Image 1: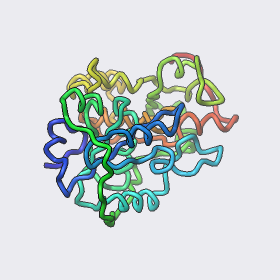
Image 2 (image 1 turned 90 degrees about the horizontal axis):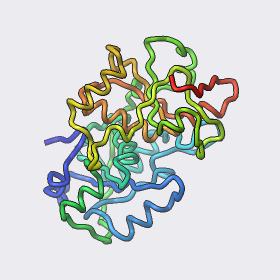
Image 3 (image 1 turned 180 degrees about the vertical axis):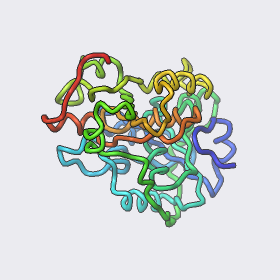
Image 4 (image 1 turned 180 degrees about the horizontal axis):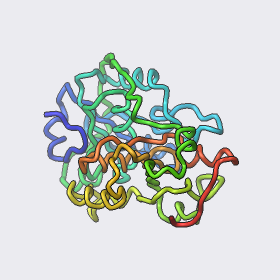
Length: 283
């Protein structure tokens, strides 16, 4: 069986030693970028490898391309190959933040054309609640070769959005918390607000009270209210830096609404150019 969106702790536990699977710990803290690697070295899922959001799942910053620009696809594919990922490997990503960072690896793998990728539903907390094992042992890894081909429709750039501002055929979904969307309590980026015309869908709204994703029918109902009969192909997801936006894209996929795209530079790129318009109202 191939997993393309979510996998439960019990399902993953049955494949911990499967040679055709690779597990990745994607824990991160924006305020403490080394938190994830420290936590990984203390304890992680058996056979899991660590991928760092800044070093592995993002490209170099220029000051004008956002806080977590998309990586060079060839560099990313080579890094995954070093971790033993080939085209027939099932990837599973997890974190301790409701999937906020694991979803970034999920989206990146699909951007490379690798659809055998899933996020551990409920993350580390769900794994521990199930009484499943952790270890501090580092796995032995045999490098592999990952053939890749970018999905050109998966992402858009700032120019694409600038050219379509005000077009009803473009629906921007902002995954940040509502206060940051409104332009309040901005602590990460130098300018507060959102892209004009965007709607707010905080990524945490995709989760139930237990930290796992809401059922697919509920997600579909919630997103269809936002889309207002638009096809998902007209949706562009963004956030602060192109990370938690992937959570909304995963939720849309779970809901059966496939085809939405990512604005990878997101707000941190958008607001770096003072010529671009900024909104602070709640529209």
